[in-house]
Length: 335
Ligand SMILES: Nc1ncnc2c1ncn2[C@@H]1O[C@H](COP(=O)(O)OP(=O)(O)OP(=O)(O)O)[C@@H](O)[C@H]1O
Image (cartoon, rainbow, N blue to C red; front, side):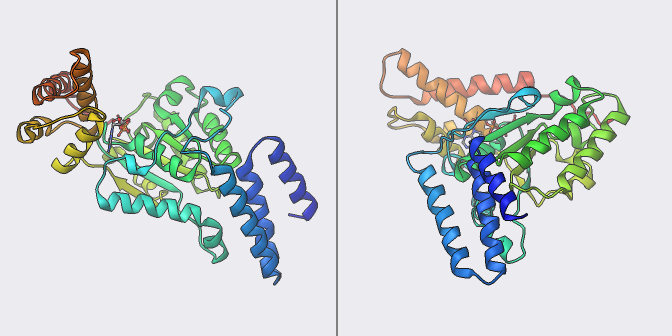
């Protein structure tokens, strides 16, 4: 890009309030300077971008001001400002390590590029309902100080039958225009045989478009996350398009305890009988445990108590078990 075009693009991104695009062009200029041997100027530019980014982020916790998608996109993408960071998600050390690695590669993406490497940015989250996939996508966005955009694929396919591929094009164009974390929820709807529609030709079209869009380079390094409860239904060709697959598991005893303690705050809970609580919580998802705990806290508040008791928790965990039994799907059918 010529200097004049770069200045024009920078001014346009400033006018649109898209700071990340602004910085990204400034870094492209820095890289061009470095290639021509002007390393001090390149370093100065890079340091100025880091400083500007830090300044923009200071004063924020993880809240990110960002415009919601407009026009056609408003129907397709839901914008959620991230409310927490990865420390709020209870997960095992190996999963945490891999998420931290995505954060690091994204934060140091310009440095990686200078060494001819592309940062990982396409991630598939696999795991049972309520195990923290959406929460982790939000936390990843929080760590990167980016907005989270959620695209519900099943809804997109049923609603825009015949035009889904064109709508997906719009979404992917947006990922190249505005840096963010884009979560394609219910990903099996496009990636598998479980049809949101029985129109096999339409599903093929959507799948092929998706494969093609995933291969395209992304000028903003937006992070694309697919989330599914049914990895077995995904087409292997699609799986290969992801840089990483991350598995979310049902909670261990230690994780159950951490989720309960976290959600009991700010109540007191002396002398809980953990043995019976853990026994009843086993088999419930992270989400069900968090909600049962929240209900137990509400019970204590309504009874004007400061303490949550073992019985409060057992009663609410039992409620969740009954709900789980009532709603457990019997089978998942392959077409
Ligand atoms: N690993 C976790 N650590 C702490 N809280 C969790 C965790 N997983 C789930 N929760 C709680 O459950 C809620 C719902 O979880 P989330 O939506 O992330 O699950 P999910 O895996 O995306 O589910 P689904 O597949 O049904 O979309 C979270 O907002 C949080 O309150």
